[in-house]
Image (tube, rainbow, N blue to C red; front, side, top):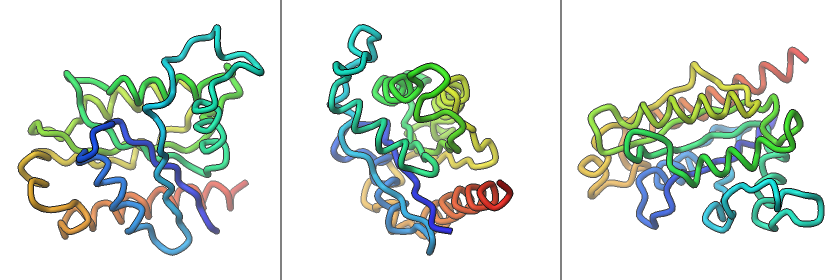
Length: 188
């Protein structure tokens, strides 16, 4: 079964290590899995119910909803900002949670991984992101985790795709998401 995985990156910085992780995941996807890196989170306005009405939804938010709706699963890459989830990623989750009970996240398998400078690799942000995704209706794949500490030094001169240990871990993560989605589809 071919599985489409939408990757969302919680950092807008051009040299973001989480973006580099997502780029590596695109390259390392196993046969039968396709990872699509979503572009445009910076263009989506903060969620506001006043503009989330048919005919008025911003084009950037519609693009995100369509991409998530077309995906079989989502894989979020998050840094840790002040001990929690970056606003851009939370905003994406908010847009994907609507309309209530029928948003693009409803029942969709979702996993969260990432890297951060701290010694725990952003686990607080990842936990907060999983919580938000679950409340928003996503089917959180709790068993799929990867937190890479020391991003600033570890990836100072090495792209994550060129770090043998990280590349193997990323390939395993994408493979697990692919496998879990395929198993669920086969059981349905």
